[in-house]
Length: 269
Image (tube, rainbow, N blue to C red):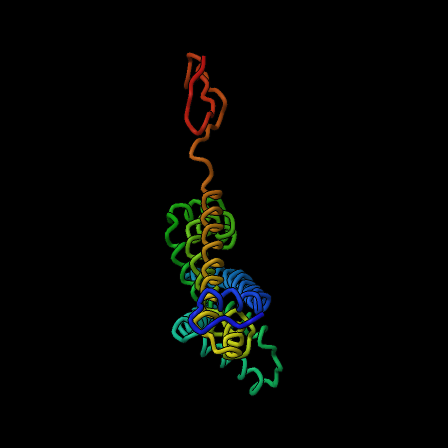
């Protein structure tokens, strides 16, 4: 195949897509894998840290328990502030080269990438979870304690189901951010989409055309994930129409029964 001319933008885009399409797809797959797995693990970390940060302290506890509680809160707060206050690109360098230099741990770039994305996401999700827990009415916690539930039982059975629905948009936001921010992992040679595009661009020095293709792929991934998450939110919200019973003679002595038709209420005798 002949090379397109210098001014033939469309020709170069088509040519580069044919030549390096599989490389771009492989990079996009690594990007999605890093973002999805990293966000999932980060959400689990964030849930644990968020619950621990809301752990109540019994005023009658002994000095050792109080000291341990304060130490735990200090460690969790330090974790959140450090990973929220430093760039992911710097964290990647510290984790990858630090593990090798300090602990003689020969970690693969992909493993380091998963670790960095997960721990970074966990720091952001911890504050999101804490805010979501605080947004649930305190009366529900008091009611759960009144029937004998422990703090963990209250969190798992009462508070967290509501919290997760409330923070789902933020989880989706973190996923989309991670899809884009995984591009910084190219500094430790993770072969994600940006790394693949940079490698392809260097062959013919067609940076504009290559990164136009990369930009389109990033947009397709983020747009698709955004729509899927909106669909999940809609499903969790449930239908706007529902009835607890088919008929209630006490509430409707005339015997009218509501039936669902096209999302609107119609009445029949």
